Length: 271
Image 1 (cartoon, rainbow, N blue to C red):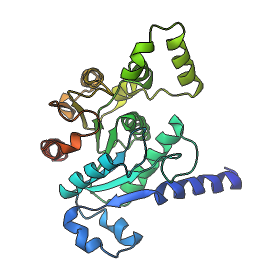
Image 2: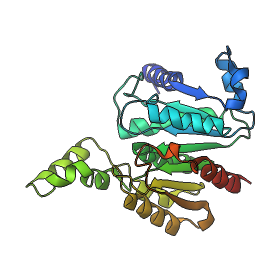
Image 3: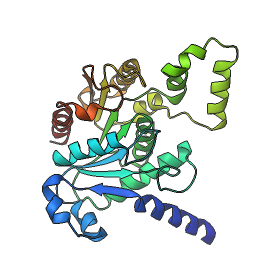
Image 4: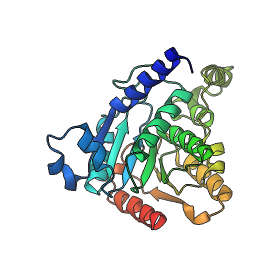
């Protein structure tokens, strides 16, 4: 690698890590007051499980529903590392599928390097589920599978999700509409093929989906679960939980059952 390339990679790496938001378990909130970065990094190996949170396509890591989820997880004893991918929030650069995937892998590996024996879970929501399975496949290929993966409101791949997006369905019969959508996705090299990625994973995988999700309909989550369950050798490593109506696409964090569902699954898998 040439010096200019090394400088570019180093600048990108520091940008990603700089834009991490680390929320400690609420039981350590008092300890964290006034502490600097070195304290937060050291806290990652305190034995409390860690979630690397990969958000969806709208806004940034500080959107209200994301902050609410972080609070729920923090109160449940989790460290939460939230990141804005390149081109989102205060991160520089232009978002691409390869770029978002590289950002997620970077954060996961950075976290694992500081977590000791503490397990680290990749949690993706909506678009973030595609980022999560892309990153998990990269980690699998490196020989270091993710400790666990949680997919909240996942799709099978971005092509299927796009042409079935509720607001676009009324246009599907227009001549050339589907071709135009496909051409745009192909031009931007966007696939996020979770339906293919899960066939190569071995990490514990939990899929959670709201029954009344109108943005990414439940059928996509069910289909992805079916593909993963068929592909996994150890069927007990794959689970799907469907939440009753009332939480739609962004509000599973409001369900009293969410934290129990997550902790129960992870404790069984990490026992």
